[in-house]
Image (cartoon, rainbow, N blue to C red; front, side, top):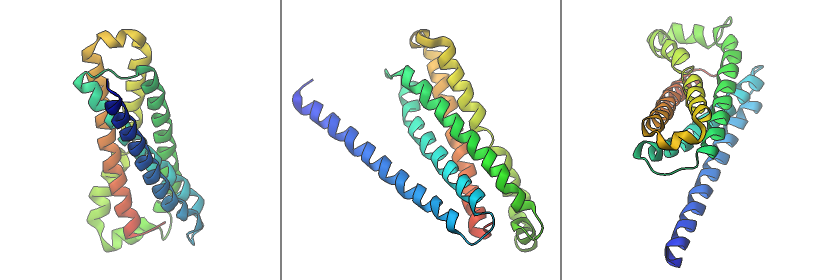
Length: 192
């Protein structure tokens, strides 16, 4: 590898990481504003917002790694294992905090009552869909991490398993994205 190629590679890594960190900071700052929203559920909203955005950012990062897995490009499996465990943990926190704030959604005079009165189709279709679709990323990432831990170094010789892990990561990201967008629409309609 020539010096010029090396410098290009290092510069590209620096720019990608800087862009990702900047985007994460901005998104987390936006979710952090939920802590100051004038509602008695601002703690739940803030925790859910930050965990949901973090889960989406981690899922997006893992998606880039999944493309390499599917194509058969050499990657650091040891690192990927821990990224998957971390992403599964953040997804779990997002699901738990989502259920925590769900009490307010279904509570008396909560957003559910307002949505049913004004846009019932949203609740009957999109919200019911969101409730279940948002739970899929956690087990998918857990299964992908399990495969990587179980097969350890033997995974390098199993292209079928590396492709399966890549597909599991992509599916988890797709479900994350759908749940995230549905949650944003819900928050836009009626904040808790």
